[in-house]
Length: 266
Ligand SMILES: C[S@@+](CC[C@H](N)C(=O)[O-])C[C@H]1O[C@@H](n2cnc3c(N)ncnc32)[C@H](O)[C@@H]1O
Figure 1 (cartoon, rainbow, N blue to C red):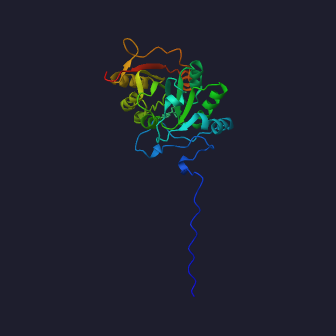
Figure 2 (cartoon, rainbow, N blue to C red):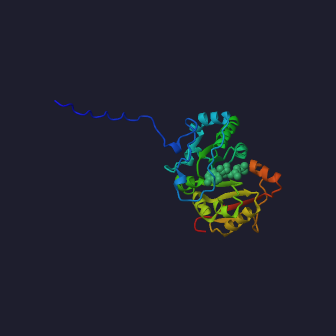
Figure 3 (tube, rainbow, N blue to C red):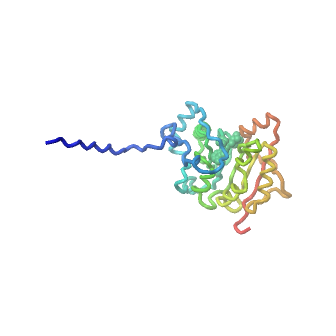
């Protein structure tokens, strides 16, 4: 009798969760790289993906605290901010950098929750460490593109405020399209802000400040909180940020803009 060819054994089922290579976290349990795969979207992004060096201390904070205070912007689920912040009013800060100003503002105002979003891994670790050492429980850290967070994961009227401090200036003219503060961004942000919520922007780039003022003035969902219009005096509650300090060292002038989300229907 001729021997039958052996049927190969089927591979054992995989039990462990395997993330695609471009989403695997660098720190066990920590933030994923490009969690929503946003580089596959045909969309101009306001940040440059970079794989920055994370210190041992920052890495430890990411491994230990990310599962408690952090989440990935995967665009797959809705976030209940009322539950996350136990009913506190919530302000979203886009682009917190290293997070020193965020931690300071959270400590100064424990009655407000801050949802801080950035793609910058060392900054995420740094902010988690600042929050723990400062005993802050009103800060949560989101990893990924703020546009996807706003578009896919936040409910309408979820936010009591929005802060964009020193967004990437993209100074070259051919890069201006990457600047965050544009009419489409404002339209999206407005849908997630409660009527009366304030959008607070600051920049040390003169032509970006002019652009911000122009698009905000023209946008039907926002009105200037400043009588007579124009830039706002720097509010005492905004601490000096790291980027701002670098701009001031170069002799740049800083402008604050505070615009209110107008009520639905006008
Ligand atoms: C110029 S830094 C300013 C950081 C900080 N606010 C300060 O003043 O020191 C801008 C930050 O915004 C982040 N950023 C830009 N676009 C973003 C986006 N769409 N979603 C999340 N973070 C973004 C960048 O990664 C960067 O850390």
